[in-house]
Length: 298
Image (cartoon, rainbow, N blue to C red):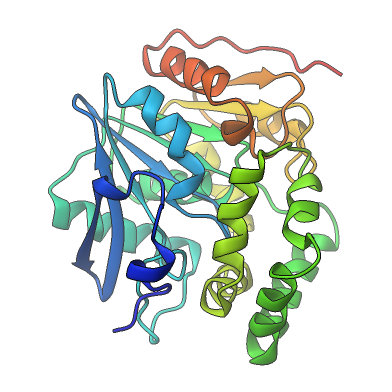
């Protein structure tokens, strides 16, 4: 099975490379990074990202946690099975199988954007039982109105067009397209941070993975199931997030049994990359059970 990217070539200089390993589980060759000692903390990235997005957060939390990061199926350096489609329940089940293979039982878990949806689905389906889940600008509700149906269908059409991933990867290598994409999320990344995304999005296979994930995503069912979530949920929301508005986090907090919102003023969708100190502090507070709801600043 070929990997999504060539580790020897594309993984040169990758953040926390010395903590990387490849683990076979559920038909995939997973890229996994583990660093630090303490209670297990699972970090799950969002659509189109990889372990790199947690590079600075992991360093700050590894002092008192065993931090576990993975590249999701079809993303980054995780080799994919051509027979599997990454639905939300399917992705949750795959990640659960990986945890079983690693004999890991996360005490805490945090997910960014779609990664938060995967963690919530895992908890709802009884695949793991952390003490608390932290959502980092979590994409936990469908887009409003017609967009809820339009975006998955558009992604499906692009996925079925074999030229689309190559086109998007070509765009990523030309004209600052990735920098503009990052800016559109409301976040301000360093040139180094943008360069990691450029490396990923220059790969047609990684782009195909993101499109496939979007095409098979169902947040309507997740939204209906949210009131059943027994795991405490802390929702960290950047007030400048243009991808998942902070209002989504406040709405989700009212839907679950035990939810609170921490609004971080001036940060966008990639808040954990923009301000790792602030986000890590908010996460650590949540893990100690001391999180309190905070009103979003206009």
